Each structure stands twice: as structure tokens, then as C-alpha cells.
Amino acid sequence: MVAAEHGESKTLRIQVRVTPGSRREALEWDGSSLRAWVRAAPHEGKANAALIALVARSLGIRRQQVSIVHGVAAREKLLALEGLTREEFQRRLDRTS
Image 1 (cartoon, rainbow, N blue to C red):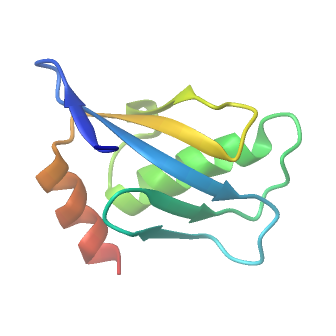
Image 2: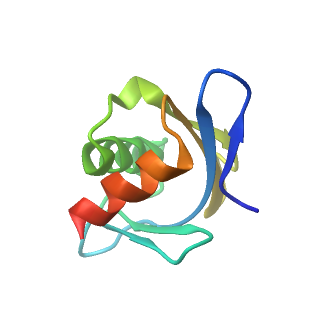
């Protein structure tokens, strides 16, 4: 399963596919992974920063709670979301739709 909680700290790991340089900023959950569109270009980490900001804003958490665990230079990334369970993630994502 892509979304998995790790340890006692309630860290949720989510796989995400990012489309940088998009005309819109949006998140879409398909049940197993997240799709993200960001306006920022993939240059000097700007798309990664935009992704972190978009996820944090959409889920109502601090940017410091979102980190890229794997795939910093790739479209396919693995995000760590601190302080969220799968249920909390799904509930917060549903309310943004």
C-alpha cells in the first residue's frame, strides 16, 4: 500500500506524481496515490517548494510537517506527512474537493 503510517509518531507516507509548470495548482487523490499540479518550474527546487506549500495548505498543516523522502529530482515522489493518520489525511483531502 502506498499510504502507510510509520511508527508512533503518526507519520504518513504518500506517493505523489507532480506536474510542474502547470497552469493550475491542484491535488487529486485516486485512492492509492496523489496527483499534484504546481505552477512553479522544476528549477532550483522551486517546484518542490511549491508542492510542499500546496500539500500543507490543502491539508491545513504546517509546511514543516511535509517533507520529500524520496524523488527530489523526479516527478514521482514519496512524501512524509507528520502528525496525520490515513483517516485524517482522507478527511482533510475530502473537504478541499
